[in-house]
Image 1 (cartoon, rainbow, N blue to C red):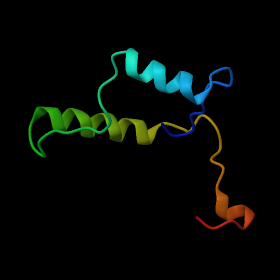
Image 2 (cartoon, rainbow, N blue to C red):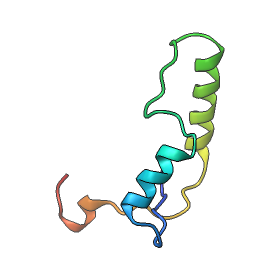
Image 3 (tube, one colour):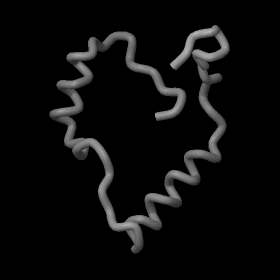
Image 4 (cartoon, helix red, strand yellow):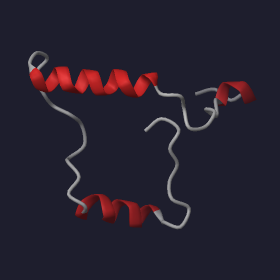
Length: 67
């Protein structure tokens, strides 16, 4: 998620364990390129891109580091 950060009080192993047990879907989104499922996904993404970021992005290039 754009601008999100991990919970400071969780280790990465806690995050992985939570992801496996919380009922979250598998990684990735698979749906046909046409139809109501794709239309809903597209609308959700476009809406999210219009939101103001919760914090300024930390761009590595500004500090001279390459990707």
